[in-house]
Length: 236
Image (tube, rainbow, N blue to C red; front, side):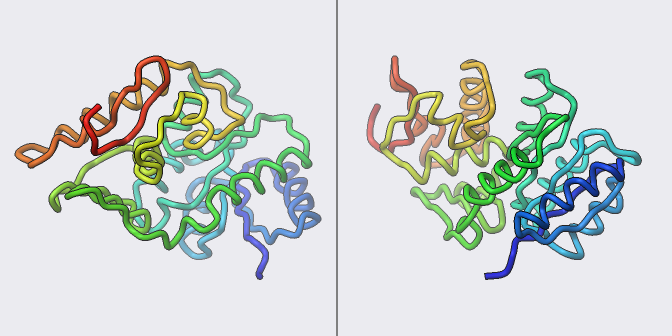
């Protein structure tokens, strides 16, 4: 099996060199870019297995590039780890809302970085090529990163997409907030309970925004009092 290719996007040559050496020693192939424009071109041309993306970049921020990658079908499923000196919860939540898979805060150790990369790659391994998930006339297609209800497109953000996918893949199972966080955001991210509740509300609102459907799919995301949430076609 060929080694995974990592794109390192950082405007500091010393960091690119250090990360590149660490990746080579860990058995990865790597590419580098110093700004958002060159990074996007490298992603389109080479389709890396994962992007290490610095938050602060010349010619457009890393978070703007992450948003663009998640918006475009061809790049929507490429895993992203942010390299950032920003440590506040608001910054992390902003990145996660844009579909970032994990964070590594500067300064970081090469050993930690490689461990995070391996963790993210394990999470996404095998997901490419997954078949569409369908419940009645609700369909989620992981390959095209699209959701439809009765063939009508449903526009959701990357976090809500991951959240719905997780619930659909585990129908009838009840998950508490910690379990949902680990599955959707990753175990290394700290979120307040209200953050998960907010995303559940957003997802329900989005599903109910498709009018004149036979089923109100927002009601299939059920609150289990004192425990958490589940997706179920059975009455709550």
